[in-house]
Length: 540
Image (tube, rainbow, N blue to C red; front, side, top):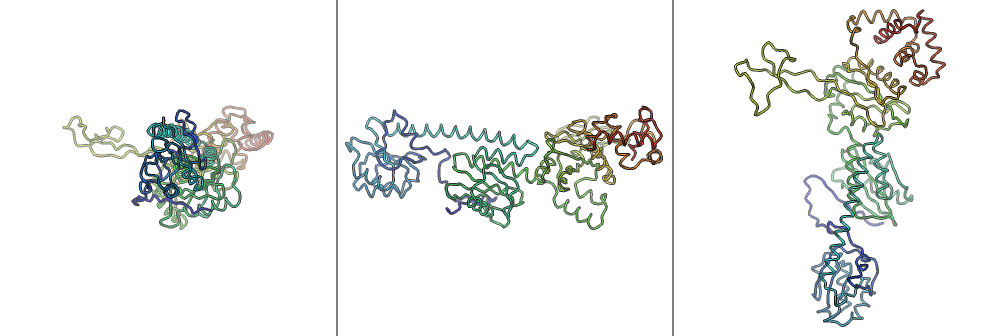
């Protein structure tokens, strides 16, 4: 196994290592030989070589002036010792030698042919009618074409990866698309080598073990860890990239071949996965940690809410994948990020809905209120460069508007149920409301159902009196019966949709609703009865 090569892109670190190659892709020697108008012929050495640039020199020893990867063109003006000459070219890393015949040499010297065959340097015969500048121009043209192909490939890959990142399961989708683009294996690993998600053909056990060890090299568990590393194991090319966010996650790649542009495509995936795997970055993680500690030590939700960035109102959202697949922590985190929050609970167990806590929307603009004005009557504060009309009026004083509640919107691939905006002291009730809203959304096949706050005529009844009336009216019902009646009424008496929402058989729904009518001694087909019961159920 080769020694891993590493790079470190830490901020402020000086980049003192010169580049090892040009920004253009290498050109296979076979592509240059295929240009029939050049008349080039390989007469010695291997057939495979990659050309990075072209250089012409008639020095007896051009070694000090070569960077490696050149097609060196020479007419052999000072060629006296072919074996030594070829050895120096091989030491300098030259890719191939193009030898021009006439006027110095009528044919390519036999000793030069033997030296190139012996030392493994491709030797091309350049006919007298082909100027060296024509060869150089052909190489640059091939490089431009290769660069254009690479840019098109990278652009297509970028579009495909961005599309994958917008899917409901963005992390597995990005890995699958990356594995497809690179034709290999793409895996997301923890710092300890645990595989969280993977896509593509699994490498052999030895290569997989080498990839895990390479991932540990770049996992940012200690200062100074490199940001990326590459290695080879047998015929498998291995790469590892540390994701941003300080979570120790690593993108690990294993491919059978390494093509130009692969590193750029992998870099795009690293950026996307860093954002998807750490959606809480930018939020106040220290505040969330402090809130958790205080609640564990007995503080009330109202006391810790300011540590989460707001005092409310809060919206509770329950979510499930529309395809029925379970949502892991990374997928749920991506959902939270798309909704604009880092407060996500996806660890309640298999089959449970993801819960999201959404704070208020963006902070409203400050307004200016003059004496005698309310905030609703006030004008927006003048921006720099603007003039305030009627300067004779008293000076305006800044007034803060109440934060606007967040408005959840449908998310592709998800079914959402949301509570109405609620104060932090009523989050437990909002959680139950969100669960019912999700059941309603699934039953009606709606992407989002939002529980509407009490309003209209119902809001005219004092809350205490309404709650007392509801308790008295619904007292004969058990909790399961009340939940069934609420769901049935919300779905306009549909037996099938209620069964879907509750996850029971439609006959069970019929039996429960019939039992409700018996216990309440009411005709549930009567619209007035349904209206009164709905009003009561909304108070519980």
